[in-house]
Amino acid sequence: MTAYLDHLWTASPAAMAAALTALGWAPDGAEPTQPRHPAIAGFVVTAATDVSGNPAWTALIRASEALPLPNGVQAAPQWVADALVGRIAELGTLPPISRRQLLLGLAAEGLITGEEALAAAQSGAVPAAVEAIFTQLPAGEQLAARITWAAMSQAERSNPLVGLMATAHGIAPAALDDLWRSWTAL
Image 1 (cartoon, rainbow, N blue to C red):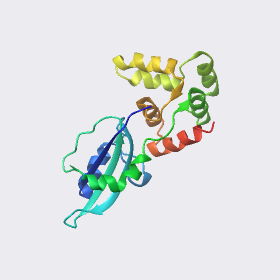
Image 2: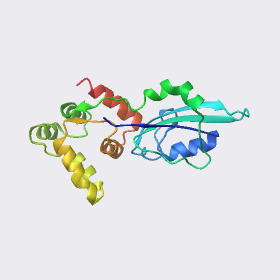
Image 3: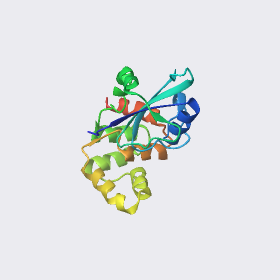
Image 4: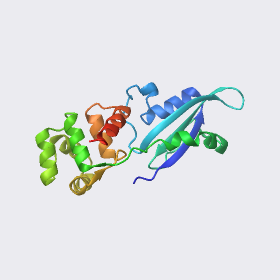
């Protein structure tokens, strides 16, 4: 299971929007302008006012690694974190799915063929769409990705390879989350 770090940031709306957009956040479920940072499991963004009454945004970010504080953004005080703790708890909580569920889901969405899904289940063969992701990785990461595929008994939504495949097929993070939830029932 992936371990997450929670980040709580506050800034003016413009500064926060710039910082979050750089990480792949998309407001209102819109398509992000760039792929989500691979460490990000989710965002919760709320509008508020700062202590001077100026407009401010607070962002709760769950990530699998520490994120540097962007320019113009401050760490929010602990009392803000305490008030919003329930909101962050739901981020990054999509359960892992079995290899079988992953293959059925990928085939159902047309991301791999039924024949490729069957071959992957029977022999561990790598579907063409997955192979395409492997070949995009730096040479030093390709072997680890191939071994992970071959040895995988379950898949985690937070795995960067899952995000890369979704991005390659034009699937937004929120849409992938919805697919993932549906695949848990397969």
